[in-house]
Length: 431
Image (cartoon, rainbow, N blue to C red; front, side, top):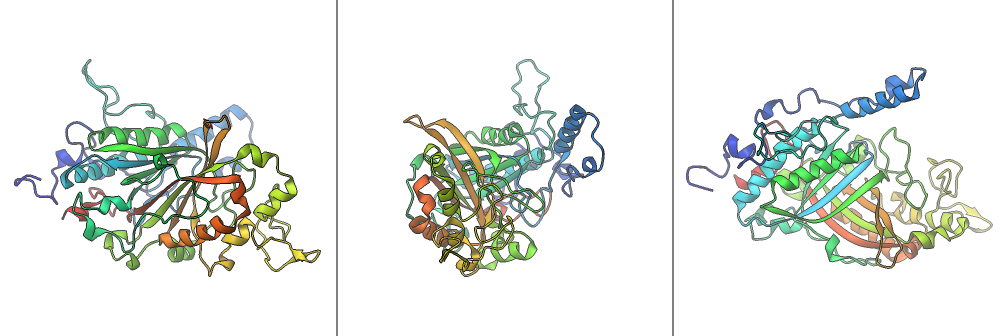
């Protein structure tokens, strides 16, 4: 940072784009009219459908205008109802100075506000014939599609490269080694991460593509996963299914009290910038699909502890029946103690809960011709130890381990939301 430009006072020109990377001047109006989520489907549900094609067009138009507030106490993309598509990307910094990092975070913050409002981050069609488009354009005219962008910092960001050690949250470190892992270094770690979720995959892809592009001299992509179907449910959403065919996320965290107790970080992080934030755990889980598909239904249900079609606990009749881990059938537990739901249930873990926000993924075929597919598991919790304690139990005892492998992993500190237009993530690091 030069003598003329103090570290905590970036000029508007540099904040909103630097050397032509992104043009977002006038940030004060970036998110006007997006103070709350639009309601999808409510009006359509009350009307008699007369033209299916018209109904599809109306639903598409509604999705195009669906938006979530960018500014607030928390980042969007955590308690936001899960959208249909995910692009998760971890980045390494090639920047060598704190000033470069500051510019990346400032540019990204402004651009994220633009894109979640459905606006390009610069000109798509320059007026000069040889001008290079600032925005790549593939999401132009597609609207917001419920886009949320969630930023996280990896433990490595707080090493000695940028002088940020004093800002590191208490006990924040890479996840410990755990049973059941076969981690690929190509899918682990990262200095920064972006979780992009939207109801259209092209809108989510465009967002990450343009964030990476505008910071290409300072960051490089470390790993990325594209999720094509959500595997978790929010309030009033039908529980979706994972690629094993079972409902996923039936007993997810919900309600303000649960979020306050289990998800939102506070003073325990001993860093004010984490207040209202959370910790994101990302796990790329490869499923042995072909092997699973040959397993008898009785064994599949015993492994999960639920019926496949209804999703009911084996001690009940309906999906949302509370599991009874003491119920017996023919003298044996109705729900096996080593079943998936028995091992993760908060009743059996001193009340521990995590917010699951995962997505299904497929990457074609693996090196031996099997389906390379599974679950991009993402969870949010106020302390990473919540995940670690549950995963240690699963890694050592879960019967599901015969059919899955954890191949990717990362943990990221997600700061609280930006209070107002003109703020940017990490500003307190450079005061």
